[in-house]
Image 1 (cartoon, rainbow, N blue to C red):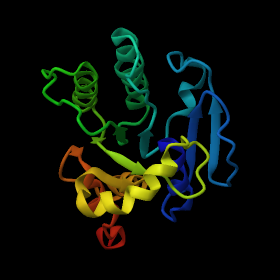
Image 2 (image 1 turned 30 degrees about the horizontal axis):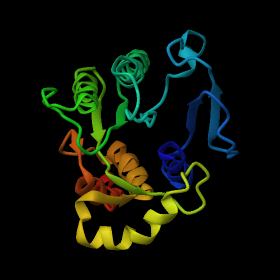
Image 3 (image 1 turned 120 degrees about the vertical axis):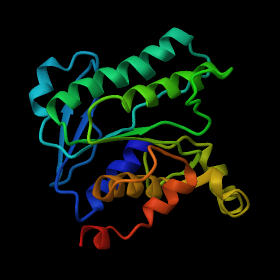
Length: 215
């Protein structure tokens, strides 16, 4: 869902010239800006490594829920996979901005009681040690999907009803997927003063006037 929403904003944005999607299966989107590479194993990027250069940003939206998952498997697909992908990208693109979609509740100290939060925190911390132009961790909470999105669970129809109330009463816990996508794009254009962005940061950055930043 997140990847679909961010891709949609990239294709709509006038300052995004081209988009490369690296997927396990076709995303089903056709657009003049879009190129797609299908690869079954993200741990083996040898065959496509030379096609990953020349990009300003990576919007890393891959992720799984830890619910019911073995801790070692969760760490493997959350930490190991992300770092493997990032280490290959940074060799190809030193001037790249790496935007990692993390999540609310992530433990940046890596010392908390929740295993998933520690793993996410370590992933954020180690990404920021890589020599990218900048690495940013986005920590959305509840995300309202973009209208017309295909990859949305059925229970979001309920959340759609309560979203206006949640946004009004607890603005630090809810944002739209459109705001997340725009915030990620704007972070590449004008940067951000904090390496970790919570919901309020995401909403604020999504509304930034990037044209004035460029001028």
